[in-house]
Image (cartoon, rainbow over all chains, first blue to last red; front, side, top):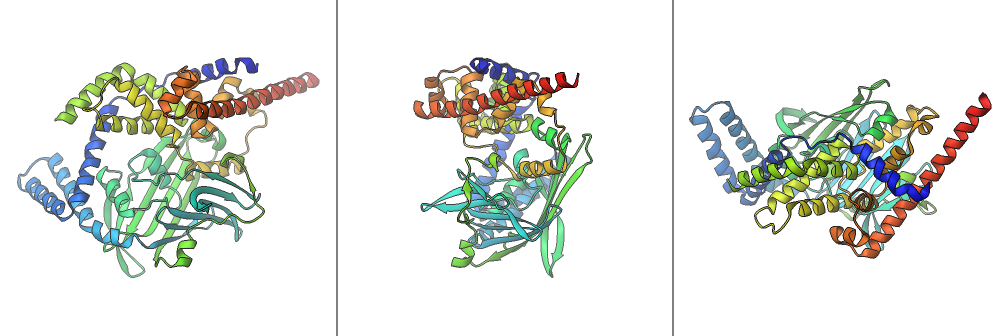
Length: 305
Length: 178
């Protein structure tokens, strides 16, 4: 049988992708996303000049009495201006250490982040259950996944942090505990620019006024393998960020992922994270790295944990 | 304006080759949504270089697709991990594996392989490229391609053996019951 494994694999690939068609409008969407990203980059690069330009566009759109589409462009321009105005402040805040304490339907967790370093830990009945993030090995940063219940760990190459919630994949990440991104302001501005999120008001949290940014809900058909595991067909992700209007850094974030559409009872994972931004002391920076406990057994991949 | 022209040309190109590229993207990521995301990202990169592109756009697009996939474009995300954790609460029927055709099982395992091994196997057995051609697409040394292909195939062979044994075991059980 093994001699024909390549034929079986080829057949399997044919069957797996049978009926898959490229959706219409892919090129147009790619062109639109490219234009928007170029626009955001240019706006950020130009700083104050872009604010003025965006304001001019907004005023022009309003004054011309143009129909709805121009009005939407005006709103978009004002949103961009709003974001750009805060980018410099936000960049000033990003040398701080991020600490997020999460309460969720899956149990509590803690997230630390500083530059490319990050540590995410989940707890179960008060004990550490798993940790995921970066570790320093031989002086270099590497991806790591530690499971405490079976005393195993695996290493992996560092993954690029999410740059926005524009893609479905990244939007899905927002349904869980805090995602790992080094640059919240850029993440937020890109998500607003591509329509993956919008400013939906102002909320006071712990006596401080915050700006609420709500992600557009994303519903996806689950990949076949996962659909089989959870006996569901679809997942819907919703998320909200509450950002400090001065620093443009998140103060609170909430996300939820619901699965449904299958024979099993629908499941819903919801989490709320309160964020703190700490001074980059040695102790705080060290806390952003995962420590692999002595005696833990290394396995080749997360799949074996 | 130049962008609109490029988009128009790209649309014509996709009308001809889009389905095949989409199928490749689905194989590399394991799902339609993720495949569409991957293809979209590759198309954006293609548009960025459209005017300076010298030669076949499909070659460029293919290289971009595979390199993005090999770099772990479809990361093991929190959602995936959450869903795996839910497994404990939603037990699978004991004979589920036995009902699945080996070909489907092989593809499912392929999707669990590390991104680099998966990219190599898709290039070798879906695109039917030689090891040298695969190395050229990915920009890797041929030895790296050989070892990635060998490790990936070893995992698939283990599965094929295990599946065969499971099937025999199931058949044996059924014979005993009758």
